[in-house]
Length: 192
Image 1 (tube, rainbow, N blue to C red):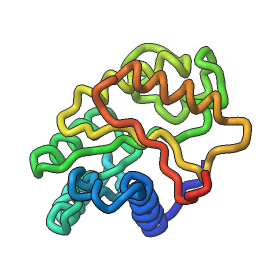
Image 2 (tube, one colour):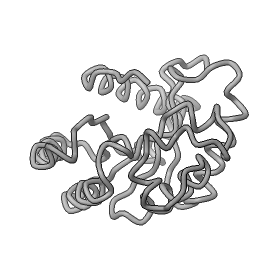
Image 3 (cartoon, rainbow, N blue to C red):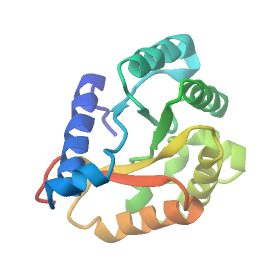
Image 4 (cartoon, one colour):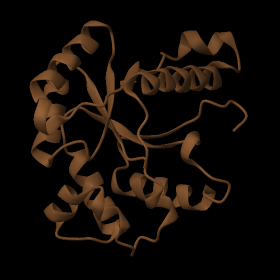
């Protein structure tokens, strides 16, 4: 799956948050005063296994800039690195939203094994290879990390016309595995 540049990803999140805020508060100005704005977040693309000190320095810069949530791919490092990163963010008063967006989750059956190549650390840790079992383990494991804000399931740039039922099942499974944390699907297009 092609990756977008960190700069483009940051702007994508700004657009998504703007669209989300517009949807949340579009019904009337009076509701904005009663409901606080959601926390501000930014996409991050840092090699946790090889650049942890740089990644933590970037977290500090984000925190100093007022960012409250960092969104990073859930397989951007080993499980030890993910844990270290989450702890560093939490110690600064920040939260982590784990990006799970990969069409394999919603386009392939839970009994398939296609996701193993992307999340081999989780597959090895749980001793499983089937997409559904790996997802269940991953969500349960990430939910226990300090500072987990939630999960970025997908965005409209990767969804096709036939993906609705698969995405709904994917999101439902995440919510079943972790009913406490937020699950987000982003859209930069207000028509969707």
